[in-house]
Image 1 (cartoon, rainbow, N blue to C red):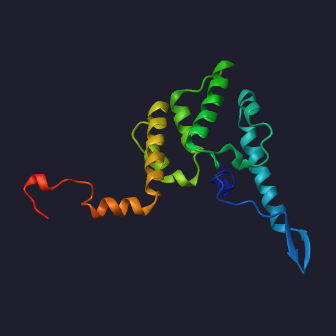
Image 2 (tube, helix red, strand yellow; image 1 turned 60 degrees about the horizontal axis):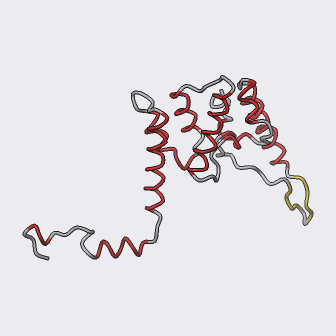
Image 3 (tube, rainbow, N blue to C red; image 1 turned 180 degrees about the vertical axis):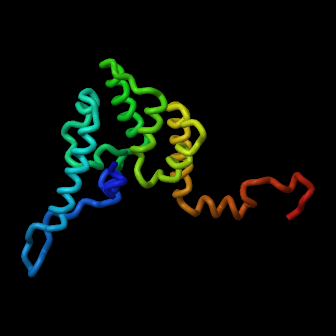
Length: 173
């Protein structure tokens, strides 16, 4: 529904929050862009909350903007822990979340930095189990973080022959 109304970018964080105040004619005043942003964001939050059961709604009470239902700036481990706590809490009150739903909602909450990962996982013939998604996500996160490490280490390995010992295979360099 949010996609069809062109409001999904409020929920996924692609529409950034506008500043509340702006400077105009050297005076600080309310930003009309913020008022418009706030109106639509609150509409989206209301739409999301209206689709939740009473048990699940208790976990999102107090969230002030729609995108707070996401991973945000949390580490993957923090996000997984918080997600698991919500699922465990739901199970404790008799509303257990099916494994496929856990996988789906875990992936949906990751945010735009994980779009390619989420797309790959969701386009498989069968949505992977929650455990498989969790393991794949941790591997993906480790791989991604290792790609952003210092280039000095990579340069050293490359200069030494890419880390492979080819001399023992009859080749001389």
